[in-house]
Length: 374
Image 1 (tube, one colour):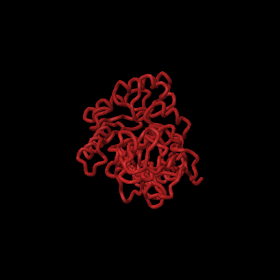
Image 2 (cartoon, rainbow, N blue to C red):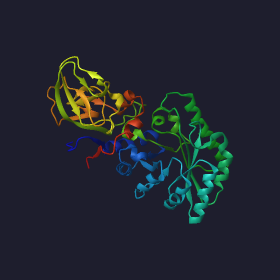
Image 3 (cartoon, rainbow, N blue to C red):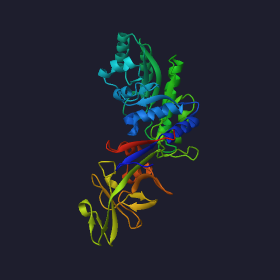
Image 4 (tube, rainbow, N blue to C red):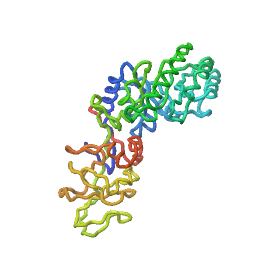
């Protein structure tokens, strides 16, 4: 793909559609609540939401805030706010019929009152804390509170969900306990006559590692990074397709003598005469400083080590193995070149972080370019 700019993301919409359909096949009969919060992890919420619709595999879109839901108001799928809402946000959310999170009785009562004022019925998702310790009703105390919430006028319980804290770890006792806790609560509510249409706990890692998280009584899963083929957990029977490439160009090629230093703090000092390429991307674009003297970039299918410290707008790489390199050449920072590949997971490991942070770290000035055969 010929891109006329300095630094860009290539986002493969066909790969996103393929991943969504693949995930749907794995978890059936569970349905997909595709998480597109944070501007779809920085990949463009409207474009990814459109791909979700085209896939035919997604039943609900998950967002973090009212503002994110409003940005997608015309996308023909229900929107669920999976974070918390402020009291001031409730009227607009009820007006648009968004599925609202309920983490306590006070929120439920505020939603009920607003729904009655608007003469509407507000759908809500009950947020349960089974051990994440962030938001939600404590699982062991939730049953009596939910029975009262279910009786509130103008409010319809659309579902119930929890967040798993350690689903990236295989056979984790805490995760197994969390799954058991939400199942036990759902059973108790059913016995009390409270119907929970949508029950979910599995995000991307659990979809890979914990089949029990999408077995009955669960009815939904919440894929996020897996949509882009990026997930620390992996399974041979779920061959997700990488959907995101991060690319730039050589803005300079230099011959430097032995002993010359490169970058701030003189982090790299050349032991021999070397050919150095200057890439037109730095930490202001999303190239993390921990890649300094540790990471690699790809040029013509060859791995080129990062030389010196990543700076705000530029990163230097060693070109000793690429004598053909010239100004303007494409440099692949994440993605494939020939038989070589650098993944989002590779960057996450080097940077000591998670794939979610890598995907969310690309700056607005990095152009988003969408690829599709259609």
